[in-house]
Length: 116
Image (tube, rainbow, N blue to C red; front, side):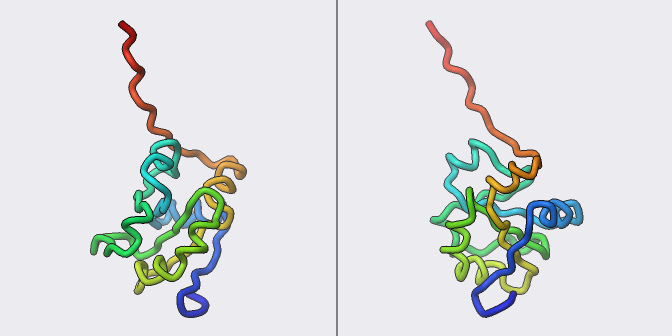
């Protein structure tokens, strides 16, 4: 961490490399946004849960992201506290930058309505 409550930024390509090494990505968007598309293996941590404690077995490296980076910047102090004692980053540009870099996402599709 650079300054108290500030987390370093990481590019999508750097994040992908850290994920391959075992980093945990943490999606701080709403549950609905998460279901609409997220980075594979991401932990969903919507705004109402930003002050909760992560599981003790959470990875030693965390990468936080939102849609475009604004919400992670706004929640930075809380996220830095949440990740205390771990290597933590903010994904620069959020999920939009991840997709623009051609990296994969996972979308949970609702079951189609049955027409009667």
